[in-house]
Image (tube, rainbow, N blue to C red; front, side):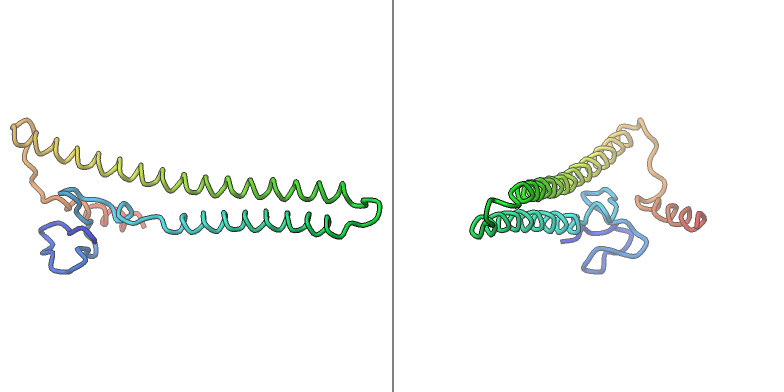
Length: 157
């Protein structure tokens, strides 16, 4: 469910999004990026974890195949042990990388929530200040800043 856009947009479409306008969430403008989950990083984490598991299974299969059909005199034991340990360490590092990716996703969600909370608190404090007369009333509708952002971005290009 997408949040509605600012009331001066008319809010006639079902998605609540209009070109050039920021969506509204609890009376506060939020960036489009703050509303979308990070699916790409989640998928990457799963891919890295699966590849780690595949490498670990292949290392164990390699050792088992050597163990079942040993060459006479135990030839190649040092090479096999070294290679198996190397693959197990690589698998562990890949698993850790997948966990770091998951941590990045969770950190992104926390930062996003903190940003939205700060925007809501600022909005509430501004309204309290206007209501008590400590701050001047807002002369432009909320969201007009988006037009300024678009003009600035167009001038910078």
